[in-house]
Length: 93
Image (cartoon, rainbow, N blue to C red; front, side, top):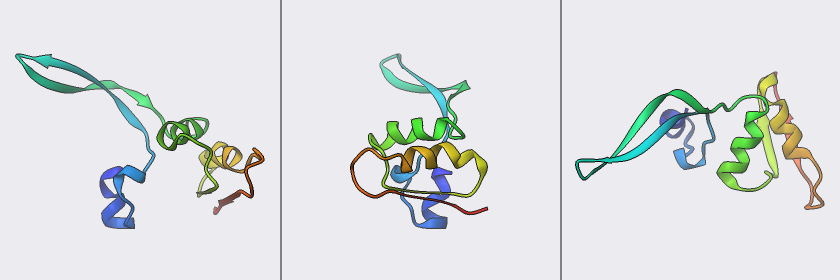
């Protein structure tokens, strides 16, 4: 999702939260090397969505929008009252 979010939606990749694969880092012959691993580091669906949001922005969102049942937990997290003012969650099926 991150590679095409900007050309399609005008949203920079740095503002996109999505599933991630595991990556390792090591220096090989003096050269830094990142290697993709055959496992998923993070799944951005269901209960993983609020975790991804917290990791990415570091706080509860004020507004969240979703379009399928896997967004329920994100909307639940976004609209939970923390005493910090109004919240908005919207799902369109």
